[in-house]
Length: 216
Image (tube, rainbow, N blue to C red; front, side):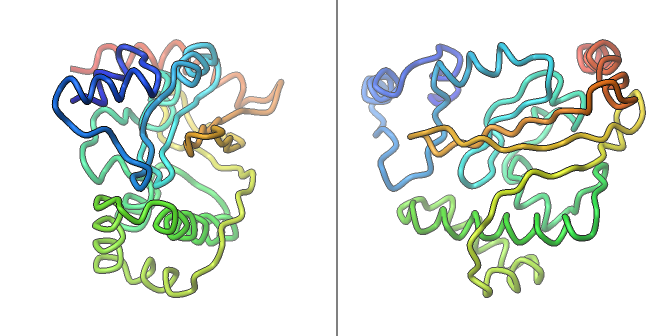
C-alpha cells in the first residue's frame, strides 16, 4: 500500500523513505529488489503515450505501464501476485497471444533465467525473490534445467507478433532500456514506419483504449 501511495504521489526515494518511517515501516534496504518509480521515470511513461511501454523490476515484476501497453498485451491490472511476474508467467503459462521464432523463444527463456540469477546475486536479502526462484524450480522443469546452466544474460533487441489485439495481429520490435541507479527495465515496443503494423497500432490507440475503458 505504501509503495502504491509513493507512486501515486510521485515521491523521490528520500520522500518515499520518509513516508515509510512516518508509517512505522522500515524502508526497503540495499539488499531488496528496487521497485520505486522515480518521478523522472513516471514522466517518461506519461510522455511516451504513442508507443506501448512498461516498467519492470530487476526480477521482471511489472510495476508501471501506459494504456497502449495494456491494449496491446492485455491489462496487467487484472493480474495479481505471481501473475504480474514475467518469468513466472512465461515458465508456467507460456506465451499465449505472442508469437516469435523458435530461436528467439530459446534465447528469451535463457535470458529470463540468467536475469533472475543475476538478481539473486545483487539482492541476497530479498525473501520474495528467494521464494520466487524456489517455486519456479519446483514447478517448471524447463526453468530448473536452465537454472543449472548458470549462464549470463545478454539483452538483445527482438521482434514478436501480438496476436490478440482488437484490431488484429501487430508485429513489434522490442527494446529494453535500463534506468541508471534504479535497476529498473523500461520495455518499449515500436513498429516499422509506414507498415500495416503501424496502421493497426494507430487504430489500437483508439479502439483498444476504448475497449479497456468500457471493461468493468
